Structures are given as C-alpha cells and as structure tokens.
Length: 320
Image (cartoon, rainbow, N blue to C red; front, side, top):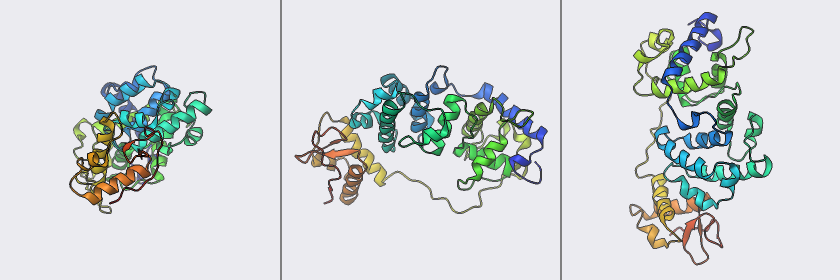
C-alpha cells in the first residue's frame, strides 16, 4: 500500500491486481443464491434486499422463494391485506420491514407500472427504501455502476486498505468503495464494477468475517494492510453487544407468533400466556405493535394482525 492509505492512493498496478484477484475468486467461490440466478426481476431483487437487512442469508432463502412465487410482481403483494403480509413474513425478524415492503408494492403498482425503477434517485422516492437498498437494487438488478456498502464491504475495505477493524459507518465508506472499484483505461468505471461490489460482499461474508477471518483463503492477503500489521484488534469506542433473550423484541415476536398462527382475532388472555416473564414488558410490547401498525384491536377488544379486524381501533393503548 502507499503512504496515502486510501483506495484512491493505491498504485495503479496494485489496484488492478486487487480487482482481478477478487473477481477471479468470486467466479469460483460465489454462493448459488436464488436471487443471483438469471432472469431475476428488479422486484425479486428488491424483496431479497429488504429481507437480507439484519437477517442472515440462510434464514432468507426459503421465505424469499415463497414470497416471489406467491407475489411475483408488486401488484400481487399490494392486493393482499397488511396482516397477511405480516403473517407471511414469519420469523425473519423486524416485521415492520414487511409493512414497508407492502407500502412500496402499492406505490410501484400505482405509479410505476408495476416495475421497480433502475436509478437510485427514483428508488429513494419509494416508501421504506433507504440509500443502501436503493444502491443495491440499482447495482444488482440493473447493473448500475454505483458503490454498494454493507457491513461486509466496510470490513473488507477497512482491513485491506486501512489496516484496521471497521469503525462506525461514515460517508467515506462510499468514497472508498467507489475508489476501489475496477476502471477502464480512461478512468471510467469498468463494466464489471457491479460484479465487483457483489464480490466484495461475498468476500466479507465467507472469508474476511468479523470473528474468524480465514486469511489463508483470502485472494488479496498479499495486499492486505491489516494482515501486514499483525491483524490488530479493534481499538475504537466500545461496541454494545446486541442481545435478544428477554428483550422487548423477543416479547413482540412471541405475541406476533400467536396472532400469525391464529385463524381469527384472539383475546388478551391468549396473549398474556405467550409472555409471562414480565406483565409490564408484555403490555409495552403490545403497545409498540399497535403503534407500529402491525396489529389492531377489534371493536370488541380482541387482537389481530393489521387489516384483519374489520373495524380497527389503531393505536389503542393496552397498558395495565
């Protein structure tokens, strides 16, 4: 690496070698994920990207296959009640993503001729679509040469280029990814730039992992500044360990499980036995599910998934 210690400061021949080695590795090591198959639509890529947020690949492949078979176009999902969408989301976690995807489908059906836009700016105008998702869809569905940075990409670049563990996300991450992408002789992004983005993600997911990186299997270990420095440990601000057991998230999940598995509205008593650890936490979880629009209270005081009450009383507090 050069003393500038940035992707743009890499010697041209070294940058080219990194590009070629990562792409060559990806050609043989890439996982046969269903959303990477030929003929996959922008809608199907969008569904995969929403599902993959904060959920491991292994837990997404089955639900994704079910979703795109059941709802192959946005209008098919848009026609479903919100509660059915939440039910189909199952145990993917963070179920508000299901509602956001439902709203996005409605907009695509009504305003975009049932098609997912190809450019980042238009994608950002869709409900529930943030910068990462917009870039990922533009890149992986339509081959747009835009940098895509997730946790895996940040880790690879931090180690390979900067010689350290990644810190908190920053605007410089996109700049780094753009500078590291393969280019043509005149400096323009090469046609394989979108493929390189996918390759960086795959390298971080399979080899340059957070806890047990397999440097011996890394195609760019010879150019890795982190490896040269002896793989220094993270020395930034303390990171808060995310737990799940006993949290409000777990309580919400248990309550949603009851409603997803029910064929109709259920009583408060049926929900009470789903989470017996802490009655206050249970009520707090119910309140938050109502506030988020994931569940409703019927006019006779029963609970059901969104859109299934007939006469919803949205946001009705249940504390106590």
